[in-house]
Each structure stands twice: as C-alpha cells, then as structure tokens.
Picture 1 (cartoon, rainbow over the protein chains, first blue to last red):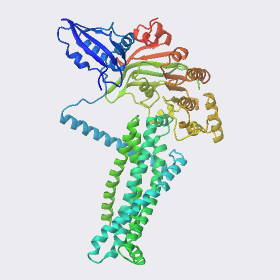
Picture 2 (picture 1 turned 60 degrees about the vertical axis):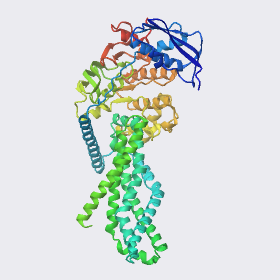
Picture 3 (picture 1 turned 120 degrees about the vertical axis):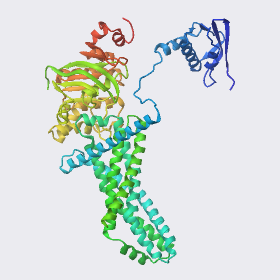
Picture 4 (picture 1 turned 90 degrees about the vertical axis):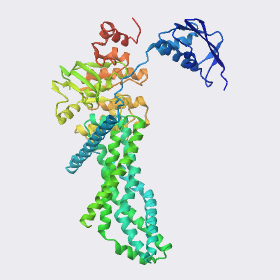
Length: 375
Length: 252
C-alpha cells in the first residue's frame, strides 16, 4: 500500500533537525519509520522540532513513531520541541512519557554458561523430585487417615468421579480394547499360520489381554481422559484461589480433593480392566472365527483352557495400581499449576505425560515381580 | 468473641518468593477492633503480606506474633486452630465452584460447629441475606456475576463469626453502591462482632471512610514508608510519595 503520508527530515541549521509530517497517519496504513528519521541524527544535533502544517489526521500509527523518536532523542540528550504537534498528540505523549521506561526487577535466573545451566537444571530436577515425593507422602498420610476414618471429604464427590471415570469411559474402552484384541489376533495369526497352529491365537490373545494389554490400554485411556480432567479441575481451582480457601478454613486439600478422586479411580480401574479384557478377547474371537476359519466352540474352549484366575488377577491388580498413578499424577500437576489459563493447560499436558510414564514404569516393575514370583 | 489488646504484631518481617524479596523490614501491630488497611502501588506485595498474616505463605524472615505467640513457629495443629478464628475474603471470592452458595457456606460450618443440617442451612441464608444475596442459596458460583461471587465470598468468610477478617481488595470490581454497602457491612461487622479487620484496598473512599490505621508499602524501596491513621498519612505524613498516593497525585 502506498503511504498516505510523508515524513521529511531536513536540517535548517547545523544544530537542529526539522521533521515535517504531512498527510494522514492512520491504521491500517503503513507506519512511518522512526529509524530512518533517527539516522539523520549526528553528534552536532542539539534539538529536534516538528512542522505539521500539512498534517491532516493521525492516530496511534503516528504516536508510536513519535514515542520512539522522543525516547531515543532523550537518551541522546537532544531536546525535542513538541509545540508544533496537535495538542491531543502532545497530551498523549506527555502521558506516555510521564512514567519513565522501567527496568522491572524480575526473579529470574540469569543466562550463564553451559555448566551453570546444567547445574540449575539438576537443582531443578532435585526440587521437583522432592515435591513429587512430598506430595506422594502427603497422599499416603491421607490414606492412613482414611483407614482410621478421620479423612474429611464429601461422599458425593466420590460418586461423581465414579460416574465420570467409570460408566462414561465405557464406549472408548470398548472401542480400543476390541481393536487391540483384533490386532493381537492378526499379529499372532501371521506367525502361527506357518506352523498350522492357528488355534493358539486364542491363547495369545487371551493371555495378552488379561495379563498386560487390558490394563495398559485402559490405563492410557484413563490417563488421557480422567487424569487430564483431574489436572484441569484442580488447576482451575488453584488459579481461582479455591485451594487456598480450603487451606485457610483448615480443610486439607489432599483429603478433600485428592482422596475422593483416587478412591473412585482405584475402584473403577479393575472393573474397566476386566471389561477391557473380555472385549479384547471378543475381538480376537471375531478374527479367529471369520478370518482364520476356526470353530467358535473350539476357540472358546482354547481360551478357557489358556486362562486361569491368576492371569486376570495380575491384570486387575495392575489396573488398580495404574489408577493410583493416574489420580496422583493428575492431582499433583493440578495443584502445582500456576495461576493463569496457560499454566492450567501446561498442568494438563504434564499430568498426562507423567501418568503415562508412571504407568509404563510400574508395568515393567510389576511384570518383573510377577516373573520372579512365578505368577 | 471480642477481646482487647494487640491482636497481631509484626517484627522485622521479610516476605517474598525464592531468592526474591518483595518487602522487608516490616514492623507494625494491629490492635483489637482496628480496621487496618494495607495500601501501596500495584505489585508492592500487599497480597503477599496478607497471605503471610493469615497463614498461607511462610515469611522469609522475621516473626508474626498472634496474641503474643509466634504464629509461624507454632506447631501446625496450633496454627490450624488459630486459623479457624480467621475469615478470609479472596480477591475473586474463591468460592468452591463445584458447590452451591449454601454448600460453600455450609462446608466450614459443618467442619467446626455442632449445628444440625437445618441450622446450617438457616445460618447460610442469614449470612447470604446480610450481603444482599437472599434467594441465591442454590446457585452455583458460575451462575452469578463477579460482584455477587465476591459478596458470597464475604458471606462465607463471616459465617463462623471470625475474630479477625482478612479482605483482599473487597471493593475492587464492585459498583459504587455495592461498594458503599460493603463498607457499611464491614463497619457493622466490626462494631457488632468486635472483629478486627485487615484489608488490602485501593478504594480511597474505603480507606478514609472506615480505615483506622494504614500501612503504606513502597514498590521501589521494598519496605514500609508510613504507618498511621489514613488522614494523617494524607495530610501530615513527611513522605511526599505517601501524601501524593492518597491524593491521587493531586496537590492539595
């Protein structure tokens, strides 16, 4: 766009600069370039004045230019005569320069060398570990209070979370589990076909779902679904000082907010895992009967022969442990959240990541323990 | 509930976050029945000081004596007991958003009194009427306006007849009439319950209308500049910055 204005810099005398402003300075047109005007300043200039006879109209486009000019000139010790400017512009400029440009002190770590940064990070990681440990410890103390019947929370909250984390999660758990069952069956089928042992697809799907995949997939779904919701709820409560309000009334936030969520999730997870196991096995069955031409009764019998109660038990126990991990991760990140909407978003992301990492770690640890114990 | 003498005494207090000091060298005392106002430019640490006084943020140095006993050195259980005698109104009301207004007020009442459910409900209606919110018992915080949330927060703060009330900018965001009404309510509470009131406010009308003692915190030197009656701070305080602040920059 062609500018509707003109900025002419002239030099009437050796010591002064004249800036002639002409035309209209208005959004959304282009803005005048203060740097070009400032480039004309050299060591001998002592004052700047304006000529505005041909200035027709102006808005913030002109003011931003003027402010930059005045600030830079002041820094160089050059006097700026504003008399020729329209009185409105003069008053706005006076308002903008009334408070000098601040250099606000901010509690920040200055950028140092690589070693120092590594040190700061390590210290940060240590502090983070301490925070997580403290939180887990506080939750453990609350659980002890709960066992002694002294924890303070509203029973209604537990039922609300049960509704959110249980029945409402069934559709997504059904879909994912069914597909995981299908996938397991396909993977197994390709290998077992070489040996003419397709019937063992039933064993593989049954054991895979019951021992590992049912709990793992449900855990990951619930981390994304419910863990994120916990972090967002508690983060918003932190931002709104609701958690502070609880503390001032002497109501421990961990009892009141974390316990009901954890109880509900730990109660629901095994049920969801069991459901997921069965739907996954059904998925395997569909592949076995339709694609591998196995007999329905044969597949069911093989499945029943492959599984015993301990296989389900290991998966359900894992599910309950994942429930604790998801609830603690969600609530921890929510309560650590800062007081802005951006911080609540970060808390939610962090909650899901933390929960998934914890799920995978505990899964590995528990599988190892089961192995050693021979379950 | 009312008592006489010094309620809170602050000695050499320093507050801040991490290595960052917001205010230091604070010395003042709050007497029983005072309406103590904390003033100062934005970002000078007024709210942080308030949070240290009512027990949410541990100060970096110095001590806060509550009736002669060190508040922050006391065991947590003791501090919790003291905090039950405090009422706090947060900046945005800080109502628990998953509960109705009546439930918000009922929760602390249920914790600390032996009232029956019906009595608690009556008490909730009473304090809500006091702040002009009769009939809103079953509304949730999201269903009412910001000013109403603030008043409901006040109702919750006074429901337990607290000894000391802490207000964080009670009249910010209220229309002039509600703001006046709130001032009258604060005065009334102070007279009838004998509560001591500590508040952070920018409202000049409130500062001069009801404040009995004022503390001026400076954002640049990070310490207190003046302590005295609001009128004295405005008219006779030796520090021009304080006089200027209380006259909105107009020389009189």
